[in-house]
Length: 95
Image 1 (spheres, rainbow, N blue to C red):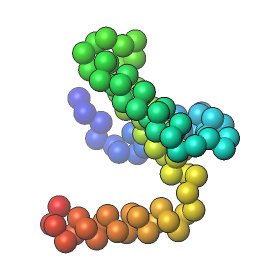
Image 2 (cartoon, helix red, strand yellow):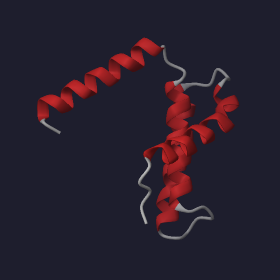
Image 3 (cartoon, rainbow, N blue to C red):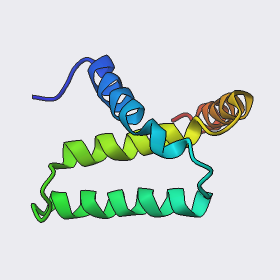
């Protein structure tokens, strides 16, 4: 049965991001961050075909945690501006 409470999903993602935040405190390049993200996407792909030790749900949580930690590295005003921009674009398209 699908999760009805989005807060449950968000809390799992935030907990995962917080567990791994120390890895993102270093001055690592965006290229390295992208490699980590792509590796996790590959693991998600494998897990969808049952060729990985973790289920897709965990891989999605890890991918989301990586994205959160990456976003935390940007100035807050830039993240808010990006959110406002994408919200405006969706409203214009009616999506």
